[in-house]
Amino acid sequence: MSVHIREFTEDDRDAVFRLRKVAFNGTKPSGPLLRPGSHGLLAEIDGRVAGVLGIGSYAQFYGGAAVPMGGIGGVAVDGAYRGRGIANALLDAALTTMREHGQPLSALYATVPTLYRRRGWERAGVFEWVELPMDRLLSVPKPAEPIPSRPAEKSDLPALHECYLEVARTIDGMADRRPPRFELDKVLEMDLVSVLPGPNGLRGYLTATREPGGDMGRLKVHDLIGVDVEAQLTLLASLASWAGLLEAVDLRITDPATVNLLGGTPLRYSVWTSTWMQRVVDLPAAVAARGWPRLANAAVDLEVVDDHAPWHAGLQRLVVEDGSVRVEPGGTGAVRLHARALGPWFSGAQNTHALRRAGLLEGDPADAVVLDQLTASPGTPRLADFF
Image (cartoon, rainbow, N blue to C red; front, side, top):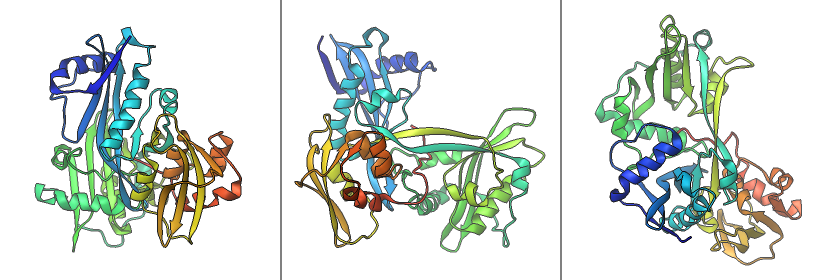
């Protein structure tokens, strides 16, 4: 059996959509196969489509810098060809493709984690929704000086994106929502889009859709973004004003401060969590693109064990020098890092002690201290976008 892998074209639309419909038990997608900011790979056996994989062009904030990331999605294999390594072959090809496209990171939401772990992806952050009953919203403190809100207009979209970026760049893992993968105009299709004008742009905004459910239904809040406490409290108060019309509000967590520091959440509350997995596709390029804290000059000698990305496997030296961080070939390999360790280390989701206990890191703990100092950032790495 010979597997041929190539980038798919619009001529493959019907075959790809059919395969995904069967794999994910959904309705047949509409529209073109090729979307701006996306591409994909197709596996063929004897000229027949055996599997498919999509790659979206994103970037994630780490240390305040947007690191280009290939978002893997829509991985499907024809039932007649399963068990023949089709998905593995697609993932191997995707690593090369992402590196060629300048994407040193990759992230995905895995329904079958074992498949992706075998190719170096590992859990590195969360995507969360929280349920806020109306009585909890009513208990949130009112803003001392409420900010007048108004419905958003098309002319607000650039400022709305800048408002999002002001918050998102301070939360490791968040996407920068760059076009063309993200279409800003789509925001205005939601049922509720309100903005809080400020002297220099927007101080905050809220996007939501009205959803059925129960006797009164719910409000599904996709973004609640405020650049200061008065903006956050103003937006929470606007949700509380729906009391009597809603049973609860479902809030997608973009800014953890909204729930953890301001929201009236009790000891126990409902939260829906999806975990995303990350893989470092190209360690030197990923380290060069990330923002890092300023540390004293130091170095860590690494041995990267990665059978599927040979371009960065082997002896590497991570060097902290004059406020910058780089990875260069060489060193003694004092700290041995397996491919699966790179993603959660890079995101800050796991420290070297946890990676060691998971069998993904070896070597003297003292040699790994700098690795923990570099990624010791507060909070949980998170995405607020699903793909």
